[in-house]
Image (cartoon, rainbow, N blue to C red; front, side, top):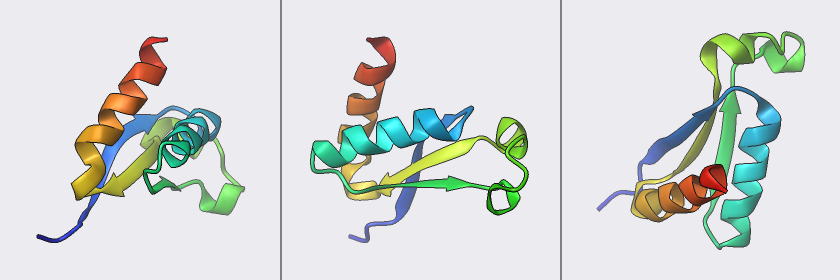
Length: 73
């Protein structure tokens, strides 16, 4: 079974994605934030493509539950 990267949530901005990433890391889930904003020079591009929170497929379900709890609070 491979541990392919899975996008579990797409956020409108980097700050929200990084908060979720930190929450996951505090819970022991390895997570990464991916964005296409020209290396930070064009932050408005985050609005069109979003900022993606990515985890390994083995932890995707648990990570989704953690992030959903954060969003609903």
